[in-house]
Length: 312
Image (cartoon, rainbow, N blue to C red; front, top):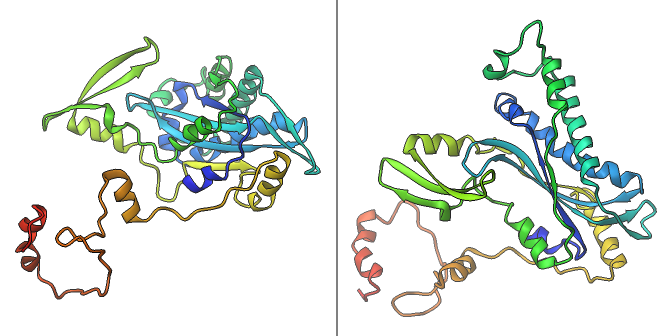
């Protein structure tokens, strides 16, 4: 993602959050395949508005399944360029997104997804208990369709540094940041989070088992991509379209760089070069690899001296 962020065009971006009613959250744990659909629907919601102007946009999405208190809360963070390529690839035209219209498209498409797939959807027990011959699954969906779904649109931003920082923090964001963890005594874990309802920070305490249970439910399935790109950022077309975008925006195409090495990451984060010998200060070079020869005891014999940076 760091490499991809370097390739993002320096133009106005808008950040949009697509939420789902809480009644639908549990469905995604009983029907994991549904998560694959909602990201595409969010992208199609903004593309539907762009299609009226025949524009190809740059779209980035991050699929999240968690709330700030680690409960289930399925939603989509989407960032989109406030402009796009015309169909003939000769112009860059601006576009802005109307929140009420986006909400209606998003709500309709999600409800249609559940209607069309209801024959193969596993209904969570909590919802199943409410369904009967007088309150069917379709009526349940009708009830949700009457609700107002929250789609939050930020103000468009031309600050490219802030836009890239916004996108970057979603690439490997865990369900809870380490800085939020405030206490652990071997039995309980306490963390703080911002309560959206009261707009205040709250402290929440769970047993270790409860905390682990809440945390691991948000681990994605193997191979599932939580980060996705659409429009002219899609992998299959960006090699062709991004150079055109840069040209129309009057920007130089950024040079791609190799990802930092292990040693460089250690140097940046811990101000320590792991390839410098702690005894003589010389650069260490890998000359050979020995497997199954050196005994652990031979290494442990020097462990204390090396840890204390003492010469043997």
